[in-house]
Length: 351
Image (cartoon, rainbow, N blue to C red; front, side, top):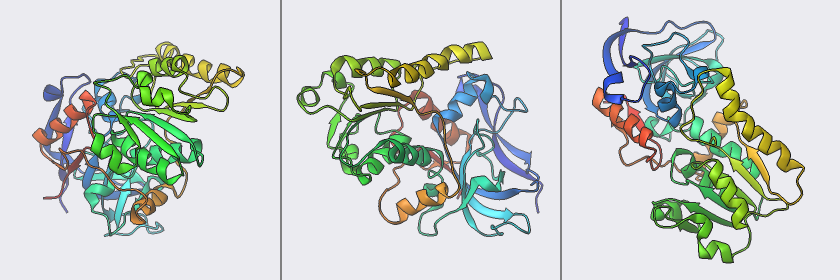
């Protein structure tokens, strides 16, 4: 019955997390609109997009209402209220993802979300873990299903992040015959299904003798590096020239900035052009820009089933779960900003 809630507010855009994020104890609880579900949030999973929105580097991701705004977008929790005709009812355990193109409103005690972005959570999976099964897991599932064929040899660049930990497992489930990845977390990667782990701090993947002596890869998926990895894949001959696929799930520059349409064009047109010309160049692997989340009805439910049937397990970063305090949230954002998460970073609202 209370009218206000606790939430994290971002006062402005920038990169100084300590000065930008603060806890508000009396923010108005969102008013649910028709077609929305009001959720009491149990946990919020952080992602790189949260840091990008805070930085204000891409104008299309700026909050519609400006600042201050509530960051975060991928949540789990308990339904408080829904339409009378909704398939959800008060008391249901659910997961919900943010509405593209920006994550908003998740780091709060309550959130109102479009029903199409909500799915029932499994009663067998803790809500803190369930919060991770939206954007990152969906991205991994989409990529594995779309690009990996049974028997493929696959190289994943940046395998121990939030998406990577899911992707390694799903590639194995798709029947990849050999999976190599770059990561400092050797034991974690091996436990998830990788066959070879290259510590990028000690060795360049494109100069690894074991990879160079082995058969060419059918598929390379880049989660972390950018354009340079595409050039190195071609120069090293690690990727098949005929039938090989290089899938970029990151932009050419991980620290991309685009404050207007012209800047956005200069960022993404080169990637689109690269994708176009490699389709018609017979002696070159195909470059594929995997752009955003392609979410279809039932996808959120399918991701949950993958965990329930043992195909995929959830990996939390060692800092998780973080407390829903100003200190806890700032810590999580700093981990994401440094791009050093190993698994998912989650803030828990549960006491």
